[in-house]
Length: 320
Figure: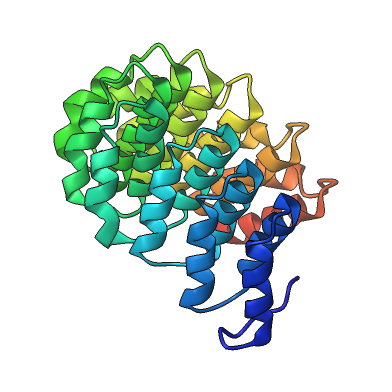
């Protein structure tokens, strides 16, 4: 790792000289090393690097700015979203998504309605974790975009906001032709409460043709702990994809229905150790003596982590 420089050291002066070198390779390395420098002078050099004639230098500057904060950094990265080089644009978008600068919300919201879908999606991604209520209108508008990526990122903003007012729009995107958008919809529906109007849509996600949509539906159900999901979840324990079964088992462990003991017990016989772990953990959460038969049968599981969870679950399932 490059050394951390003090802004008054000669080392920073050397970096400044190399950042202006005629050789693009030397300038690029200088940008990379400036990621480890501190102080406003280093930031200024990196922001200047975003305007370099060479795309590899601009990309290195955009990546190095991940280590620097401030509105001017966000503004520089936002401008780089429109760079002529694809690698620079993508690097700027990745760095921008890591920034947590609420003061730059208005700028990002403005870019969230940009004509370029790439700029729109990047701005929405950066807005997601800022959780700004003012971003909701732009996110809802994004759901009408022709670009699946823009729709997906708009859903991400709505999901972080947990905006119940957006429910009608979410119910529509649950039928989107793009599987990644449907998956994002399942994630955004995490705010649902038992008996709410959107619950049937979330439960229907457990039967989607795409396994990742089904998996995400199980994750949101687990977080919401919806009691009406018990029967659909038990049915989903027969899903042909083990990742879906594992998330389903986790959801059942959070809801704790004794009716699921049989389905979870059978999952202890799976060839996939991660699924067996989730099933054992869920049985331990349910903590009912009726699970002991299944647990004792698998007590000598070949995976030490599974055995540990089974012992823990057996202890919780002992009759009181």
